[in-house]
Amino acid sequence: MAQMMKAAVFVEPGRVEIEDKPIPDIGPNDALMRITTTTICGTDVHILKGEYPVASGLTIGHEPVGIIEKLGANVQGYQEGQRVIAGAICPSFTSYACQDDCCAQDGGHHAHGYKPMGGWRFGNTIDGSQAEYLLVPDAQANLAPVPDGLSDEQVLMCPDIMSTGFAGAESANIRIGDIVAVFAQGPIGLCATAGARLRGAGMVIAVDGVDARLEMARQMGADVTLDFRKVDVVSEIMKITGGRGVDASIEALGLQSTFESALRVLKPGGTLSSLGVYSGDLTIPLDAFCAGLGDHKIITSLCPGGKERMRRLMNIIARNRIDLGPLVTHRYALEDIVAAYDLFSNQRDGVLKVAISN
Image (cartoon, rainbow, N blue to C red; front, side):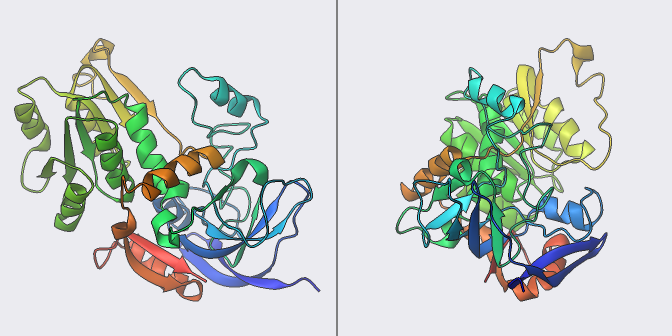
């Protein structure tokens, strides 16, 4: 009889439950991780609400921190008992799209598989990380050892939130001295704010409507914080920039209103870097888009994955360039994850990120 484990399973829209599932069997190119810490993402909430479709019975979650329990015969350079993470996006590096990423002149982002978002497998097309154990496919390409001295919570943001937020700053093509506006200071927006500062922005303007998040944005490197409840953000940003507009704006929420504001504050030739997960159609206003003649760039990014991306992110943390530990505001055991989903999806009690531990 197969050994069993606890897992958070998508049942139907509005229902995630803890169920018993068999511990996965691994193939020669896979690894089995014993999960020590994971978390809940905004994308998981989209799944919970039925806004992003996944199969009933799927274990969800895509942000794993843990220990190698078992290695496939072909996986070299790792050992059982080693602490590792794996990116939320776990590309095979064999598809056309992924190899095209690798060959890109800008270095590529190693995000896609055989189709858009095809590299996103955990909690999307295969069982994910909100469980006691996780099968990591193509482990040679995707397992990243955790440096000595770093805790689970210090590296918990690397698989998705940090990688995605930093990708937003990278895609915005920020140059030293640029003015950058980041719309929404949830976990991804906060990481985009930190990423913009690390990229050399001369001024980072953070926008949100929650005081605690604006304060956290200042900790993450924002020079100016704007509360959309109190000011007309577009007018205020144009005033701050002397009417020039920002060099780059980053949208990190996924709403028509934030997307439109991010477009309206751009200078001619500026870049709008979109990170939000949208649940409806977007409309591009004719005037803000300058009828298509404003030399604007609108670019989207999917969370870059792979072991080299994870190594780079953990190196930044190990070298004290950034501390994302404060983003973990709540902690739950896996068996209590339904309550954690209720807290996180309803954004109560100042929640930013929830650490789920085994």
